[in-house]
Image (tube, rainbow, N blue to C red):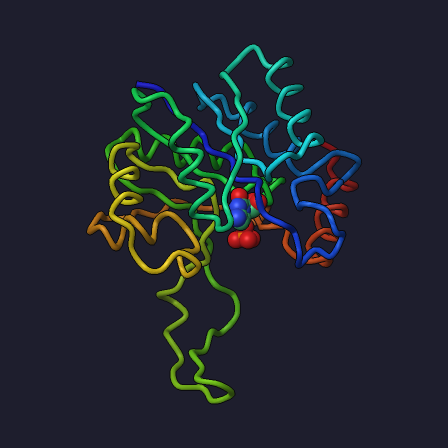
Length: 231
Ligand code: C5P
């Protein structure tokens, strides 16, 4: 048994434009990684946490060891990630103890994710779903394009925007990663690999606060949220 949480924090943060790995970026005076780990721990769902870091990042390694020292809860370890998100997730899965029954994969960049989202996802997996993702309705109309020409307009009512943590039966996720799927850079989440492997992926309600801090505007929004609602 056991619930493992893999927190992927090995991204470069290029689109944020601060010249440091994104997980090290400060928001309300604390790193995005600190905030993400606090949410994981506060959710109470994890028995093991694996944090996937950029190579030789002493700052982030210190954040992880500090969290490991402070928590009376789950074991927390750090491993080095890869050049794609999928490679980083795989490195995290490899570091989870083999008996882990359920695994949640979470983007460190979703630093304001409420602990309730972790609980909703973990509960749905515990109830028997092999793959569970938190989603929100899509507010914009979305077009399919070929170059600068629109080729289709999918019905917005049938679309959802996808967040993390994504939860899985651990054995099924390991098998899906081993089988591979679309070429690595095209794999933008783990549920895609499960879909390619034939698994049913279920949705639960996401949360606007679980947005991915990607651009400078996202950071402004996150700072404003924290100023309104210090956490
Ligand atoms: O690049 P993207 O926004 O999809 O990244 C989502 C999450 O995956 C981020 O938390 C980032 O740190 C992580 N990531 C990673 N290793 C990579 C690329 C992204 O751990 N090579």
